[in-house]
Length: 190
Length: 178
Image (cartoon, rainbow over all chains, first blue to last red; front, side):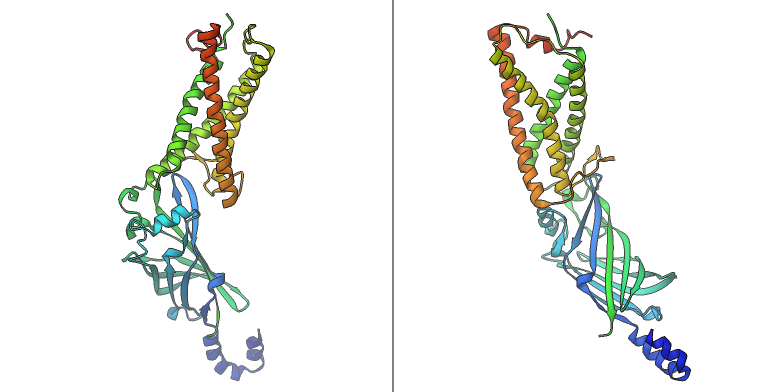
């Protein structure tokens, strides 16, 4: 609000100040404790949900300079909560994530594209278990005071990343499609 | 010789088969290591349990609208009371066992989707401690049911071979009245 008052009162000074305001408007500090990363899938036709307790995200996001926006996320796969401890132990094992050899999943954006109305397409590469696949989730931006949240849902196929091998490779019990839902909250200024 | 109705006989033996199968599967699957088979067994067990619950409703409705044959006159009032109590408890467990199974599943965060297509409402929200407690209750009620069923079988055989009355034969299939 303050900036706009200044712009109205001092148009000259504003033209200089605006460039600086743009930099200051960049959301670049991810508030991990307010951000969530959940997933859902079907098992024997039953919808189940889980989440990752630990992940690190970095963001450089200025809604007005979308071309230079960047995002990356590192997920500690062993921090998974599938909803039951037997499941958590199982997915850490070799046929699922093999967390000893591949402790984290990584996403790096390559390009943000505005779809209008606060929606963005985020093209990037997702690496899990040593396999890399392109993904293009759509994120919706919500501004709240000094914070911005990026929310989105996208679907990956677990077989593309060899998640669930051997006896689990059959999709009859655990479906191939896994829906990933992210809620990343970031604030301005480092 | 007064018999049970054909419907009562059919429900009795159909439930016998499904109860024994579901009970055995439950005992077998409980301690298996996690595998796709285990997930399938749990689903099948839950589908069978829901089916038994529905059968129990049909059976209780039939029983309340169709008077069963009287107990044999040679039974003492005490024996008759015991028999009625045992049958009453069997009916209670026919409902309580599947119901606690359903609640256990809900509390553990696994919705029941009948035959993989019809989602049933979760009666409880996810709560691990409650889920573990309900699992124990479900197990305990099953053990009580097993004891009662064995007693029920032993009593039927005693009536047939010792008392030589019609208590067993009037529940056997093939000769039921309409």
